[in-house]
Length: 83
Image: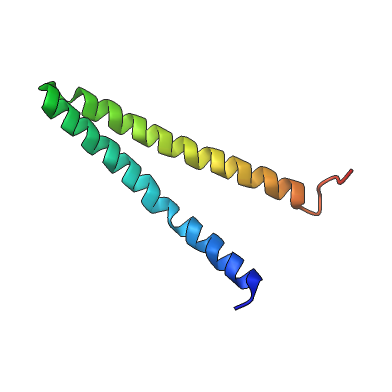
């Protein structure tokens, strides 16, 4: 396998794991909030707050990654002004 093929395979594998990462983060934050609520004997306050925080953080990560990728592609495209 050539190095360019290995690099492409590695990039594709990293991309495919992104969905799992997003789901796992939200689930872990939710479970952490649930455990904290049960330990403190509170209403599901921390469950809701940590679930929203995990979803927001995952969304921001996707947004920032997409923005970074698009900026890189804009600079590398044939329409880019190379000074």
